Image (cartoon, rainbow, N blue to C red; front, top):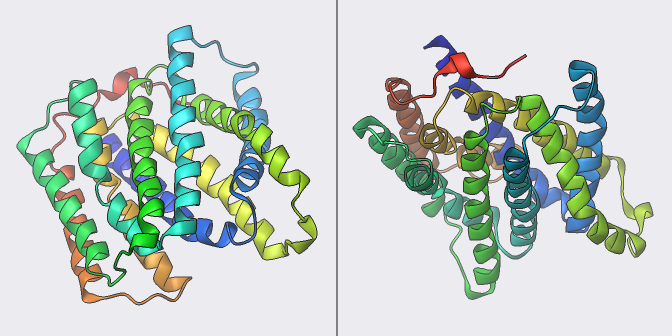
Length: 304
């Protein structure tokens, strides 16, 4: 039970970091093209993770072909497509509207876990999912963002980012007992570097790096070190001991984090609806912590 609670904390922290990436992403796309920014992020992450993996393992681990295929699908959905959808989406819509759409993530992951991983949703988990969706909806729908026709394209891209993030987490659960968290995180970063490379070269050829200041580079470092390295490691370590449906409930922390950081960094107003939403999210996580029966068994986990 203690290990499961730690896993809840790890996934919640990972989602807080991903939530912060929405705010940081708004800042980054004002200075860098999308593909170039993503490539720089994964260069930073790979420079950290590859040497760390080789130091830990002494060599690059052997991976089954089927598992390698799943890892590639993870990278394609949760690394490549997610970043394209999210960063381009933020160019055409507001962070508030993006938050409204991400409120569907817990429910989507729960459905995918039932359909594809054959997980059984207990009554407690269903209540947790419902409370999480209500909470994040309150934080975002009543926040006064308001949609308009011009943001329809951006909102559609954010929907794509939610779907790809849901697939990313679900696929991650499917292989969490077969490959170590450090190995998966390293492979995700290397795949990200490779997938974004040709597009980033094209953008980089016409980009004026002289316009970039120190704060812009700090944002890139934050994306590479914290959002990529730290969040990936926390997520995969947590998925070893937590079911995909439970992880889905914990993703409700993502918009919660976005709201708080928007207030602290972007100086956006926190409304009563935000506070009520936070209470629902905390209640969802508390209720989920009482239901340990459906979680993955930790004895088969691969850890360091």
